[in-house]
Image 1 (tube, rainbow, N blue to C red):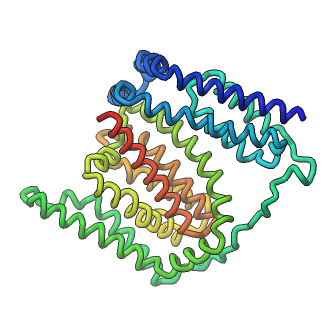
Image 2 (image 1 turned 90 degrees about the horizontal axis):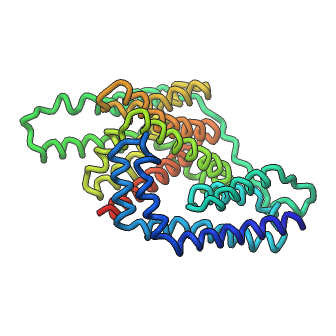
Length: 365
């Protein structure tokens, strides 16, 4: 009964506070614009300018959508609280509290979100009816096979071919036309894609079937850990911006400078397949120890995304967020032994990043 009353009142207060912020959205936006320089003084100037431009042009649309999220989530919490089923949805509502914490402009909602998370954390399920009714599904146990000589050779060829891009720019004559350079680049990246698929054809087919038969089990394992990874990733991203005074890495800036359709093909489709087969699949063939595999895979993945930075400080510091993502993907692969999980997570990550970037550019323009 106490839980029912507490979460009902908390949900109603958060809904009212969010509605109040939306009604007074213009005043909120103006206060945000005025406080940008002070609030983000440690971050790069170009980042501050992008924030200011976004708020001035279409801040009402952006924050209107963002601040609607706590209203929707708290309506769900209110309905569940009135039905006295809070304990059954404990895990989901802890996630809701974190989402509300990052999608609110109200101090009261922030405080209540933190309190809700703490209360839920200490709530214990005691009775059978307190537990979710869905049966728990276990991930399949996959017997890790020793890589054949053919697989190891293909892995070495794939690694050499992938890292060849580090010297590709240097061996292309400066006198070559831009169209010829583009053709060479397209041929090279298509070759890498085909070689990656050939090197992992049998494993990919087995993994795809396993994922199809056990998608719920894989999803329940990956999604909560993905949420935790994103929190760590966002915090590390802000820290690296404060240290380097750079809003974007050279790698990210070069992708954003490409025509949108090329960025989508390369970032959303090509990279998840090739990079997972290279940094996770291939390296795993040579390193069986889980800890060593995660450390090496994450380090190389991070450095490869920042190798073009102008200083050594930028290379290593800006590699941290990429290494966190790479380490998470290596961890998932070490636990599931299924590359399909990695490719899907990488696809979702890149697609989400591309969507956010496109929306920000649309709002600023």
